[in-house]
Every structure is written in C-alpha cells, then in structure tokens.
Image (cartoon, rainbow, N blue to C red; front, top):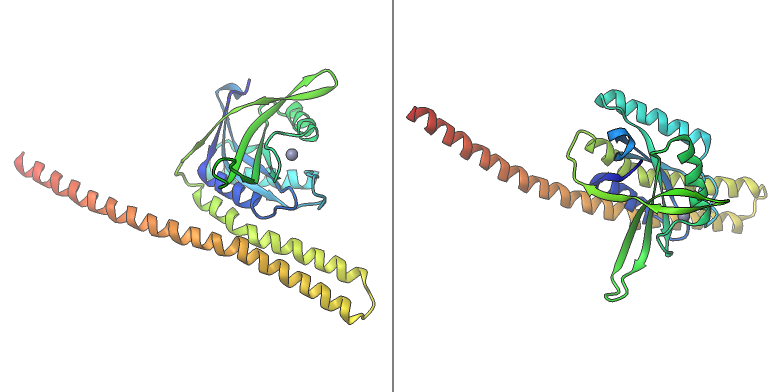
Length: 264
Ligand SMILES: [Zn+2]
C-alpha cells in the first residue's frame, strides 16, 4: 500500500509556476516517476503540462490522447536514463479555494487508482493569503481515494519535497520554459476560434479580438516569462557562487593531497 511520495524540488517549482499562471481556471498535468518498495513509495522526478481542453473554471479532464503522450514522454525519459519511469500521478490547481480534493477529484482519482494502485493526486492551492501575515501562500496536498459505499473519501499521503540533483534537471528546466509557449498556444487557439466564428469584415470586432489577444500575451510575459527569467538568472548567479566555492575547495584538497604524498 502506498505510504509516501517524494517530490523533487524542480517538479514542485514547475507545478507551482504552472498553477500560478492563471487565477481564473484550474490547470493540470501528469507526474512521471518511479515506484519503489513494492508500491509503498513513489518518487516523482518529472511532469508533463497538459493543455486545458475545456476552459470551464472548475473542470479538469485528462484525455486519452494526453495520457498516451505523457506515457510516451515517460518511456523516452526511462530509455534515456535507464530507470523504470512511468506516469505515476496527476496534479491540478485550486486557485482561490481550499486545497482539499472535491468529490469530482476523488472520483477521478479513484478511477485511475483502480488501474494503478500507486497512482497519486497532488493539488496545489494558489492565490491564497496567510491569515495572520496576509502574505501570499501556496498549499499542497497529496491524496488517494478510498471507496466508501457509493462515494469516495480522501486519504492523505505523506509527501516530502526532496532536492535530487540528478540528470533530470535539464528536462525539468525545459518543462518550465515550455509553459509560456503552451499558454501562448492556448491564446492563439482562442483567437483563431473567435476569428473563425465572425466571418464578417466587422472592423470593430476585429480590433476587439486583436486587443484581447495582445492583452493576453502581455499578461503571459508580465506574469510568467519575466519572473521566470529573473528567477533563472538569480539561480544561475547562485550556482556560479557555489561553483567558485567548490573549485576553491577542490584546489585546497588537491594541495593537501600533494603535501601528504610528499610526506610519505
Ligand atoms: Zn480539484
């Protein structure tokens, strides 16, 4: 039985960034990882961002096609790294609402769990404010469903966010940078649908649609691309400092070793 989930820091970063991309709709994605100890521990090392199929505020759905795509991505990573990676769960956001799974979430989770007993659900509640300090906060929960009569109840799964500096880091950065691209694709699609609907040459309508699209893309740049770039530049600077410190330590140790061999 599933006891614990280990979530890598980079996947957490990608999921939270994804969740923060919109406060109007729920976003979702799939989680890739491996299952250890006879299904009692699941470690999550990567994720797949899913495009919203149905832009209704409280609706999250995974299509067969998206599941197949994620499975292929997992197989690709598994072959690349020689590890038994596969789709191990799903995540979605709860903007402005409590972190706890809804009845629909529990039913969805139960359906996947029937096919795969170690399948997990993670929810990122975003755009919340800390009651005492009024600071913005993010809440995360990891859950499975238990069947009780005709409905399901939540079973909380212990989750630990771990810093595993392994070869998947580059892959997770790629996912992060894909985010603005996917969001822009969604806007383009909405724009094209709108333009397709109004065949007439109504200039006011056209101006309106163009303006809506421009605002939406400006929003993506302001809320997503720029903060992400700033965060990555800061991380790069920090890595530079670490690298210099490690190089210095390396030199010191090499000098020590030389001294030791001289003395011998
Ligand atoms: Zn939900």
